[in-house]
Length: 430
Image 1 (cartoon, rainbow, N blue to C red):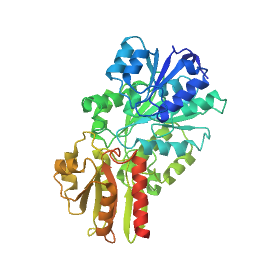
Image 2: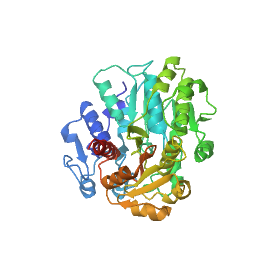
Image 3: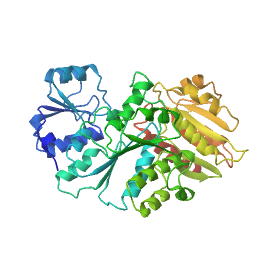
Image 4: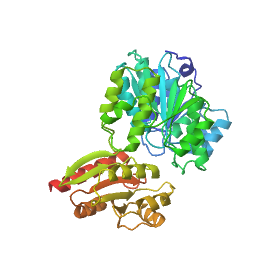
């Protein structure tokens, strides 16, 4: 374990943001020997933090800033602190600084990255029971670093999901291999334009020692792969080295065949055993990502609450339409909270007789106006679900693939998806 970086941070250290990653970073700093007097915490909403306003942090003038992904680095107050000499780091950087011989695969992309990470996760456990799977997918990287400090067994392999936010601030992180699953518009509330967003994603190639695989079915991914700083390979279900496994995979939709291809090709590059591919083929998918909920009264319910980008919605719609007969309908729940996304991209693909759009939430009317699509609007998701259940018939599918974020009505996409599942099941039982 290499502790030089983490042991030599200038104090006071400010942990900015006390979500999952910030809280784990705080625990790691404490385990590394920093005293309560040397660490301060900031969070705008979390009452357990010591400070809650940028003005307080500017007055304190900490020497090291551990910035959580949700806080933009270009915030005026962050830049003021940096210009006055503060060192900027992150939860990802703190964890990466402790590594020695671990092999790391990093995965990013606008859509598909959590599925690819999860596929790699079940595959890698065949050869390394101590493997760590985490990052943006839910388990902070510092969780692994804390295990190292406590003397627990070291991983041979680490699989990390990396968001664009995390790629902005990941000094010390070096990847053996990486994957860019798919590039499409996202997070335009944070970035000046799609070009800045894509360039942030491409940073993953500058920290990759060997290959970066790009999803071949993404036109923008194929285009931007030419700008990669590492060796690259374009991969899809049509050109990867383990096609025999495709007939046995459980994941729904053509896009998931491409996701499987990316994971399998990476496993092949890393010389994983045949049993790894068998485990990946048996994988049944993540909650809230085209998740089969139930077939009730001949109606299928699918929870895709994680879908907060236009391409995610279109992928989910296509995957569900592929399961329908020509007489059946797809009820699509569209809405949530807007993040300045191009709703008009849904206009033509969804303007077909089989799709019945039902709008809901804070951006439901925005989505309806921008798409020009017909459909009822409801202020709350629950009312929209009730409407669909009353009108769906045998053979139909009710799909929650909202496009907008969950933050108008729920804490996160998981809570929204769980609400969908619970209400669907309770209404049927009632």
